Image (cartoon, rainbow, N blue to C red):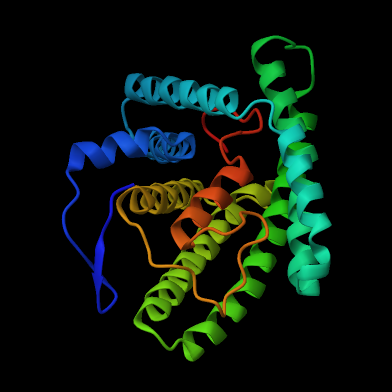
Length: 276
């Protein structure tokens, strides 16, 4: 990560593009977010293509990206469970509602990732397993973990708004405003994902164009957050803002990357190329 000088809260100085790109590709979650964006571009092209041959090409490309993301995110449940227990151990230092929603998000993510792993095994090895049941389980737990994550982020955002009003030094002002911007971006990204993953509810059929556009927006927001983290170093954290319990003492952009990584958003839950 490259040093940047701040004047009145604005970054000055230029980081060479290739250096930043090298830093970006070292972050696995950044590559995953790029794949997610590319996946939904492929789906949109497949949706609007009028040529049957082109549709098949985009379908195969999307299906390959799905398998790649599922493989890259395989085997995460144990790590997620340890993270959940770590957060639970800090509950006495956390505001009640934030602690509750954060812990629920983590514990719901464990069966979500387990069903995602089983979906991957069904897709490549155990083809007799029921993909419909496994996909239902994945979407069910994914949708609720996203809901709890959204509520946890909203409780954190309320604390950040108070910190913005009470910021005194220029460094605190820079940090708290960026924290709030990152929190807003994570909330929007979560809402986009929630539009996709509640398909387990009978009768809920999201519009394909909107669904793929939401997936694309989610991926692009993730790409932007990881990209910014490779280019900026912020002043110390504002004292008025409690560090994120999931990610420790990290500044806003590092926290965003940590949240993206902890969500393990690369698993497609065994979905076919035309659905997520």
